Length: 139
Picture (cartoon, rainbow, N blue to C red):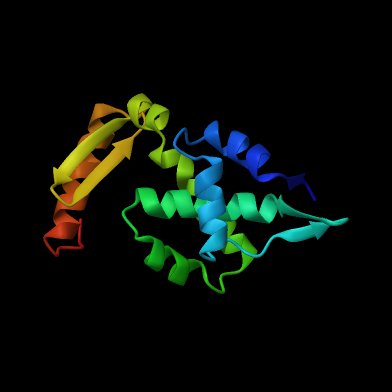
């Protein structure tokens, strides 16, 4: 199990999310968004588990969740589920968004697709999503 100081964890996360900093990590720790720190010898340290929680927190906050909602969602979740949420962080990163094309269906629904998707398939996706939004589920 890897262990980190708060600074090391902040530096690691800044590669993925430039706005993340040590102050934010300490704040999340203080308000209980992160699990309690672990002991390594006589020092309190962060671990990979904390890294997964921070990635999940970033993902949920980027999707519009409040810190209170995030705390409620993460409470009692198994570690695997927290990690799955954190794995989605890449979908919210600027370089991912710029690499892909965003298709706006309506003010509530957008699809992000790879540039490898054909124009025909994009059109079919838009039609299918529109049909589903209108309540029709048959092709």
